[in-house]
Image (cartoon, rainbow, N blue to C red):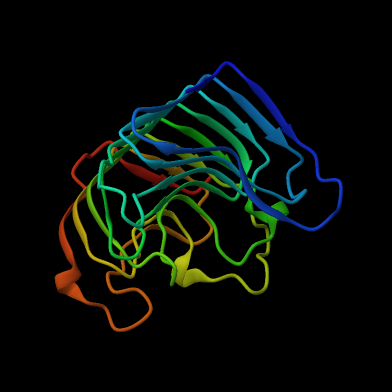
Length: 231
């Protein structure tokens, strides 16, 4: 349990440092009402990383990190005890707000990503990909996703102007549902996507090869209040 703490990441050596300031891998995890910040584009990779669950990541303020919250399945011999709620976290100047990871051979299930106000600054981070909420497609995470809800989030991007070279349109989106594994019972509703430079919502089951239609089952976009805006 990590609550009511202040963390500031300061890069003393230059480059990037691939870690997460708060790393939790346990049952019953709680990360509540913390403030985590770093200089945007200053090399800070992850703010909060939550493995296994069940658990709650809520009420946190995150600024400047490349990734705000990583939600990750169990791994190795750990039992599947997933069930992570990532809700009501304010994020500013991030490149990826919420990334969900399903470790190879595992299923990430029963995850709720809801009511997070998100402001991305993908321009200053200057990575080839960016996302508000994503199901991570990675060769190190070939697992499956099941019973995922993405609801009521506000995701805003900074203006790209004339655009940037080297952007990967196939894996950048406001909400990215592209994975290498299968996805089942994913519900996306009531989100607001503002000034999205690439795709609003991206679904590409069997990412990395030919689209595998059978890998995506029961994906719904069922709330008329969902909207994508170009401001």
